Length: 198
Length: 358
Image 1 (cartoon, each protein chain N blue to C red):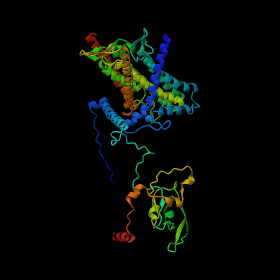
Image 2 (image 1 turned 30 degrees about the vertical axis):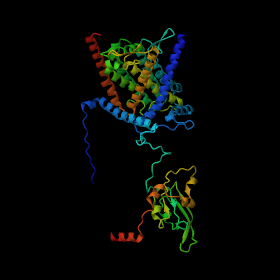
Image 3 (image 1 turned 90 degrees about the horizontal axis):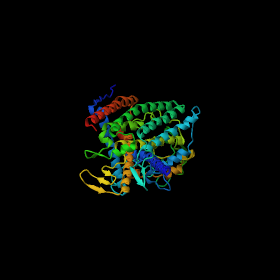
């Protein structure tokens, strides 16, 4: 095993450095410089000038929000078919793979003869969920995604953390996800071919 | 009549000190924020009005007043209550001998703009700052808390170490001005030497630096905040809550104001504005601007306040720039650097005075 080693050269303190006073004044210069620059910018902003140069890096959280990156896993949503019925076929792949065991599905017989089952109820206990995204990957019919961009989950009651089927069906993807467009997925047979080559 | 004037002056002084002390709690948060590219406290509002977070001191006071006043069961009830009052009073009282303006003629009376113009003013200040450490020691001891006691001991040791160099650093100044009265010292700094105002910083540059460092150490703030030592022992006020903690806290800020006033008075001319005499500006190259007396006094009082605010700002800047000293470094700086330097300063001043014969 090789250890990553790095030799740090320690500089000897010069005569001026050992006096500290000069270095202290230099440090005060740096912080004072920041102080006056930011004070000037804050004042300019009050009069509506130089708005393009920020005076602080603070994001004033509830009013301003940092954009959520594309692909960031948020609260789940269920997808619909073209005809408006849930895509989910209640195959139980997601509750099986879920490491937190927070997905509960009751399956019922689908009225469509081409489809075997549909979820009568589909509950996700969100405060148990570990946001691993395995359910999304396990789903064979792309019925569940985590692209709502809802990352702040706070409720007054535990039972409010249980997301029901209809709630999740009504959710929309976040604005960033919409801009990106639908995910590019290669047809499965092409993927298989690639796997065989290796 | 004399009593009334004294009370007016005390009222004015306490008003100035407390206002500045309370504002400093806001300044500390806002200035550090601006220095670190942040925005700082701006959420406290009254009917949606925020004015740069200026309501935060108000909100803090309300919070502190409504909090539980906890006294540790094994602590000393009486001393625990007494300590913050000692710390606060001694911090406040020091300002009594600092002049905030020249003597003024008012309805035929000569009034000195100074609460108590005692001729041992400087000694009085040292006595009071020396007493202020009792607040720290008693607070730490009466809490029956090991961390509190540690903080108190550190505070005592630090105070002893730095008071020595602090007192010795002004000896040179006393040799030059020949008076212990702060009013006298401030008046004497209005004279000129080589066309420049004879401020303490000009005639005693070394003494000024030593005094300023020792003054910061006396206020027990970073880089000398070992009695507090927030990250390791929380400090001598661990067991304090509510307004008693508030008193210790405000006392610290008032102490900053007093130290700023002291540095301004001793080394930066007090209420003197450069080249401003009682009749107006008199510049050494011949230019003269006559001003009415009340305007001169107003300018001088404002100049003193400006200097005090400036030094408060400078102490804040230092507090938010430098890291804390280690304990052995603190002691080494106090005993091995500042003390010999202040002694050297005395010798040098004596030699210069001997050879110039003034």
